[in-house]
Amino acid sequence: MRLFAAVLPSDRAADELAVAVEQRLRGLPGAEELRWTGREGWHFTLAFMGEVDEELVPELTERLERAAHRTEAFPLRLRGGGHFGGRALWAGAAGGIAELRRLAERADAAARRTGVPMEEHRAYRPHLTLARTKTDTDLTPYVAALDGFEGSPWEVGELALVRSRLPVSGVPGEQPRYETVLRCPTARPAAEAAADGR
Image 1 (tube, helix red, strand yellow):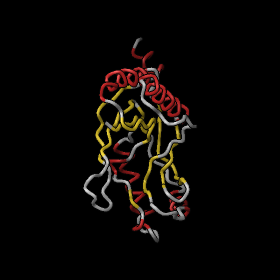
Image 2 (cartoon, helix red, strand yellow):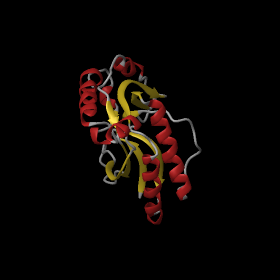
Image 3 (cartoon, helix red, strand yellow):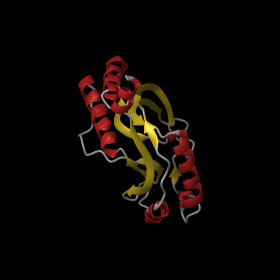
Image 4 (cartoon, helix red, strand yellow):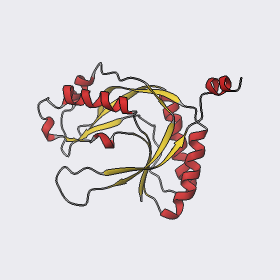
């Protein structure tokens, strides 16, 4: 099965982003040429694993649960945007970026230790993909339209293991389907845990 580890935005954060996409981006010239990611596909990928042998899944889930539990919950919010060349437009993040990177490193390490063949390790850059294009497109007007966008913070309290199913129907514009197969809770912040222990 095709799997990746991710952080999912809160419902409120996704609502705010949906409004920003509709009001700031969809009306720009050329927007109809982009393949917009559906809201159900919005996520911050931590570690992309690709096709994973089903025999490895039980060990992988154990290792991901441990990785999440070693990470304290942390605040995150959507902010601004960027692009990868002329092919992908994304929303950025702010808040607990160091913790998000640490969680990504732990998810990547969990997959590698399980025996999942992973791509060469590279520096983690948090992004939530909004749109893609098959041809090089000037995405700078879209990035500029996201300047100043700042969503409400939410607490990241879990790592999600997500299964993606690629389109098979051949219908133009069809999106992959995503299914969260596991939710791994993070540790509670130390201050919160200490307060409960009083």
